[in-house]
Amino acid sequence: MKNLFALLALTCLIAFSVVSCAPTPANDPGDPNFLQSTPDTVKLTPTIATATAGVSLHCGCTFPLIMTNKGGDTTHIQYLVTQYPADVKTHDVTVTANVTGLTTGIYTGWISFRAVDADVNNTSGMFYDTLHVTLKIP
Image 1 (cartoon, one colour):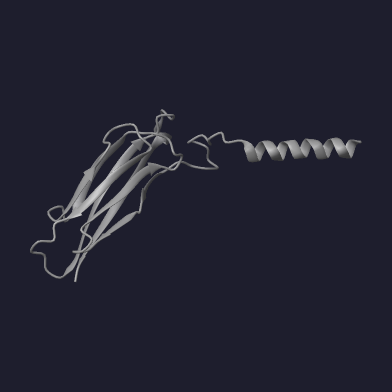
Image 2 (cartoon, rainbow, N blue to C red; image 1 turned 180 degrees about the vertical axis):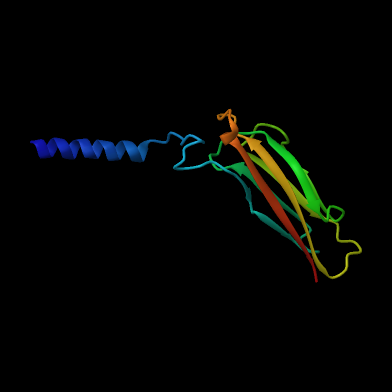
């Protein structure tokens, strides 16, 4: 009877663990939150002169995105951040290359972001990411 009770308790515990969909807190050291760009590098060419990347928090939480800086060849590589600075799960960053008059070579750029997880009101809730861009002119 003791074995049956132990087996029943273990089964309930496993079932609860599998069914539970409660989110992991953003500051849980076992599953740290972070800001991520997908993809982390946008690759452009004369035939693919526009691409979009998504910037989101690992937790899937909504958050306002703050563009902190951009650099590289900002004359030929331009950025448009949509839903900025709205509180959404994924912010779209459209990268466009102006290839007119460019000579053969690889041109690079980057744009950096900062986000504060709305559920965390301390420095551990500040997240940073950089989206990189390469433009290859054959």
